[in-house]
Length: 312
Image (cartoon, rainbow, N blue to C red; front, side, top):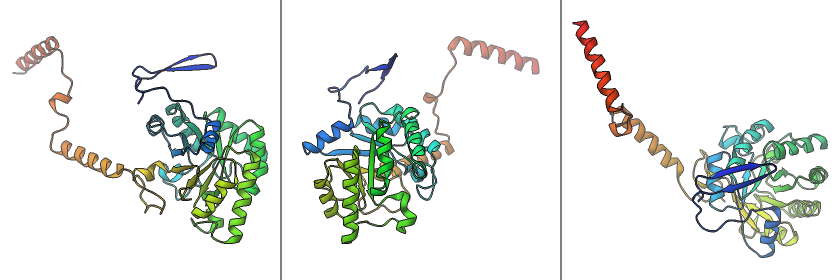
């Protein structure tokens, strides 16, 4: 874990100097790293992050990819789904995450409506995520029908992560959050979508909410690394929403979620203990209070004694 980092800026380059280095330096993850991992069958790890503190913890834990997902619409902003979040709201969180990430590959979701109308809008908004947010790739949902837009964004020198299967921005068209690719026709479409994205040159493909068998076929078919969420263990990597990982969500978890910690219980216990200590006068203690220097305290007591004498 790096602590007390100092960032020395000079021209177009920046050097990060750690005051308390532990272990060897970690190589910066790039899209090329992901392809190397697929080639060597090394698993890719990805977690979402939505703020500086979480991003720093995830990055320092050695996670390969940090995704600022539009799931922040629900986890951070309390929306019912991902459709309402705006580019400006996304960028607010992306900038915070960027400040906490040093080594991981940083990806951000382009929210609904930011690439659905015109190619020019898509390129403009993608460029904002790079220029204003500091991301290294943007994620766009959709397969064959989105390929032309994706190619144009890639032509603008912006790497794109694809996303097929259960695509939350299509929730109204899908009639809810349902597993995709359960019929032969649907499987064929998913394969076409994956191959189209692969040929378009996306940096990776997120596979969400599809049967394990279909994800296995796609992963074997394409040269692009696949990252699964609810797509079984045979993808090249796995992603989870951070809040699901540590039980900071308020809805029943999806089948594919494994909770590795209970931050909800920890936070609730801490808040309840704080409330109790304040109510009983046990916080703050004398040791947790600041005190006057002795000479100032003596002088103040002298002044107070004079005031009391004058009031008699």
